[in-house]
Image (cartoon, rainbow, N blue to C red; front, side, top):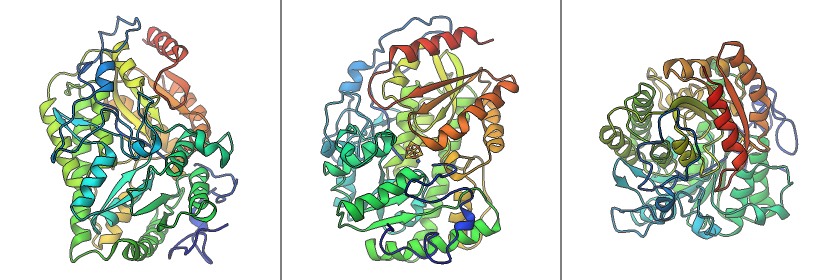
Length: 474
Ligand code: SF4
């Protein structure tokens, strides 16, 4: 079954760019070389702000932020009633007490000492400003095209709604990102959105993009983004520019045309956000950011729904206010889809683990590392930025590229090892992780592979394995 109204440049259309989807065989149970979706910034608490004990102290400790997780303080610019946690149109609620409708709403975060409202409150605020809201099933997509039309993308990664409601429609071996995203939609948690955008990150997400409009009767516009897989050359750029032009036409229908110069402004916002993220990651890697793991990812993952200008301000404020020596701890690189389960970051703070770099699909793999020269034509600039993102399982990148990228992250941050959080049933990541771990070990980088699931609590076995790994590090 095909989505309705295939956009121009859609590889599923006649004469499309299948050739660019190296190794990908499309939806419907085909074997994609790589498949992804996701979640809100972590909940904000007041505790654990300075990380855990020094590296020697590895005993379990209930993170003092627990109360903070329940009731993170919030100040909203216009007094919106925020929820005290991180879920949202897409984030995990560590309290596990919110239903899907509230969920599209979760996702509070602070930048420095600045609080942000929940995703739902934020989306409603954006609408009160005259903007539209799009529920975006990520991971990679051209946000600039939405910003240029005054549309605020709110990403659906790890909404707090459990996956139960989706079980009637999905196989049991579909990842929890898709299970939760569909449960959120079924519960009405995305109703604040004017339309939905699905990125073809993996087969599971492509199936979701078919299921929602065609079998479950979604009436709002459903748009699709098909990034090229496995190549970054001129042909990939030409395909992508053409596809972006087609997507722009669909966006014109769903949200209205972009004003004069609006896309150029949006591209500049995207570049500014990328610079702010680079600066923040650089500061952390150099040991110059006094922030816990929890606070860091709350700040970074707020980009999943904040208007870009606000995101930049908050990222810069966070870096400024947290400038100073990083908390003590064992420096490690983390890889995976996203930092889940939700309680993990606080636990890592408690264990004295300091994440100094990450290769999370939702975080460190979603901004261009370093600067990119301008491309001239604006759609080419958008295309080049997408193609220049770090190597990724969902983009069909060669494992050797990912290996080099991870080794570079570990080197530049003086990490003592790499931890893979392998999300259960995430096919694209499962393809790569064994080879990545083996490759890193052969380069002398200790690795730990953990299978994880979404949820609030961290299994004791997971904590025990992390502790044991820390004890083996040179
Ligand atoms: S299979 Fe993996 S890449 Fe695809 S939606 Fe699930 S977590 Fe994301």
